[in-house]
Amino acid sequence: MLQCTGFAAVPEMGALVVLIAMNAEAGPTTEVPDLDDMLLCELGEHDGATEHAAQLWAGEMDAARDLWMFWIDAGADVSPDPDPDPDADPDPGPGPDADNRVRRTFRFVELPPCLAVMRTLATGEREACLLFDRHPAPHSWDVTDPLADLMAERMREEIRRERGGEPPT
Ligand SMILES: [Zn+2]
Ligand SMILES: [Zn+2]
Image (cartoon, rainbow, N blue to C red; front, top):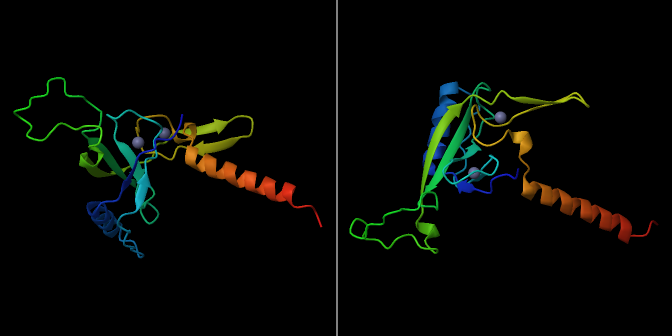
C-alpha cells in the first residue's frame, strides 16, 4: 500500500488552532507554527470521499492526544453530479482545468493515537501505528512512502557510484 500523495498548506486557521491547543496544555515553550508549511497526507492511498489527514505539531503537547488536520477537496471527482442543473449553477461546471477552483475544507481535531502495535515475531521488534484512533486505510506500517523510498534509493546509488567510480588510493 502506497502512501497517499495528497498534501496541503497549513491555513491560518490551523495555526490558530495549534496555538489554542498549546495554551490549553500550558506548555512552557510555545512556538508559533509556520504558516504555509506543507503537510503530506499520512494515510495509505484512499478514495476521494475519505479526508486526507496530517499530524500537526504534536511535539509539545500531551502525548495522550495528537492534533490532526483533516482536509478534503470538494468538487474533486468524488461524487459526479448525476443531474447537473444549468439554472442552479451560473458557473460553468468544473472542467479538467478547474483544479484551482476546487474548494478545500479543513478541520482540526485532537485525537488519541491508534493503539495498534505490530510485532515481528522473528525479531521481537514492535512498531506502533503512527496514525490516529479509528483511522481509515491501513495502519502506518503497511504504508510505504514512495518519495522517501526514492530518496533512499538515490542515496544508495550515489554511494555505490562513489565507491565504484573512485579507485582506492
Ligand atoms: Zn490522503
Ligand atoms: Zn493504526
